[in-house]
Image 1 (cartoon, rainbow, N blue to C red):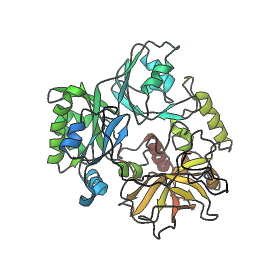
Image 2 (tube, rainbow, N blue to C red; image 1 turned 135 degrees about the horizontal axis):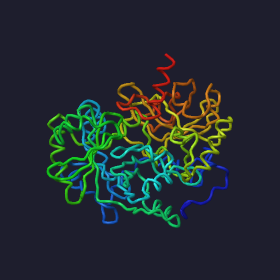
Image 3 (cartoon, one colour; image 1 turned 135 degrees about the vertical axis):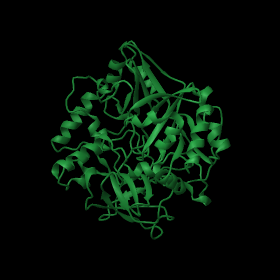
Image 4 (tube, rainbow, N blue to C red; image 1 turned 90 degrees about the horizontal axis):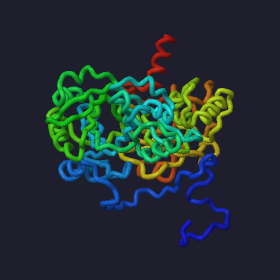
Length: 461
């Protein structure tokens, strides 16, 4: 509380909405609805510029940015008057796009004990990752909270790269090894990725690195050269569309040489550089660390329970806590106040990032009970969609345990969502939302959770 804001003594509601139960968090989400104050971002040397910075901002005209992993990250290429983020969505879903994602810093673990060390820090089995393949993984703390959800690449038998989401991971990995003495080196390397996403992404990749890229499987890797520069290529991405990533080695020297021919091919195929496609990743049910989850969120709250093995002899960090949570859920004792669900929402189309965690209330009582983490408008469904944390108690009437299965079908459960007036049907009034199946829109390459669901459906048929 600031010195300009005296303590409340009249029992009035605090604007950070303490009546939304956040009792199982040490640091509650800031739920004050402060909106977008229209501030400018200071560019200074305290935050790092990626090797693609001048390409995105000086040459391609990125007009806004955020900070992600202590690097500036372009989050808008098309100006609002020209269609803004939804024009970028059209390019992503209908043609092909290039993303500057150098913010996915590459943390390398290398040495004779690399596999054993990686097995210690991820919940999945590192021995299942073949050389020149990757896998989506999570790392948890001792309480089972999600520290990061990177793509983990294995370019060599004794070498792994953590392509990290927006939380500092290198120091934690180094800290885990203090006293454990695995024979590994752990450090950030001069590698910067870019993503090529969209239906024509393979055509671009063939232009840039040759026909062999068509043989790369989902989460497969390939060594290649672009304009004489060494790169690592993977078939991965953050969009739900078909896509690839190019990891530029010695990036501070080689970034331009790789970027230019890739962007030229993207434009030749009718595409453009855009900001990372959060509108499409929401539709695909892909999570964003810090937004949909953080270090105080269990994988069982956000439909990542499939990342926790039912049985394993591996003593990974967080194992005891996660196995206890798993046992509680199986016994019908859901140990968390909130659960992440999908919502289909009424209201005017949401065509840009939300500046706040918009509040969710119970339509029967009017009590604020949860919050939206990731909202956007879906042109395919012609409705607003969102990921939101809602009270687990409201979901108990479903004929399913409170695990990943809650994601698997629409449910007749209503909430009220308090949108800003620009999106509300009536100013000051909430809109209605119903719990929805996730993903809202299928991915070109389904996740392991989606694939298991698809396989189960085929068996039922």
